[in-house]
Image 1 (cartoon, rainbow, N blue to C red):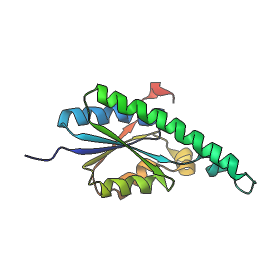
Image 2 (tube, helix red, strand yellow):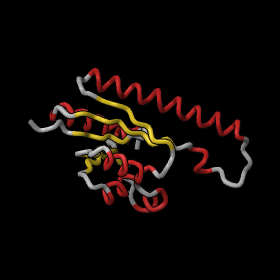
Image 3 (cartoon, rainbow, N blue to C red):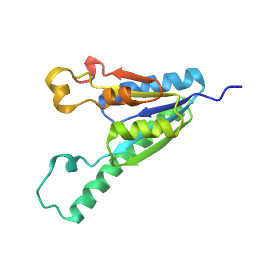
Length: 155
């Protein structure tokens, strides 16, 4: 008997990744596969604040808040998967470059397919912000299912 499909769903908890979660659940249910819900914890302020002094206490509060919010959102996704009859586990990665961490986790866990959302940005917005999904597609060893955020979801 074949091993169940190993599906890794990478989420930043945005509306774009929400659409991909529905697809990851469908795929897990259809194949009887296991689902790993992956989130790379990145402190948002560290991306934008440079050269300013921020006390360690303030950084600790920011990081604590980011982790608490991510944990709350992850718990909701795990519960939704469980309610749908899908075996799901949570995995948090602290820091790093999200695309690289997603690919690393997929490879080390022998993921059969990665599922992630894309904002569908083009032109200048894509050039300025880059695309985690595009980097994952270009570098992952396994198949990658990207799901574009529906227009009605807030674009």
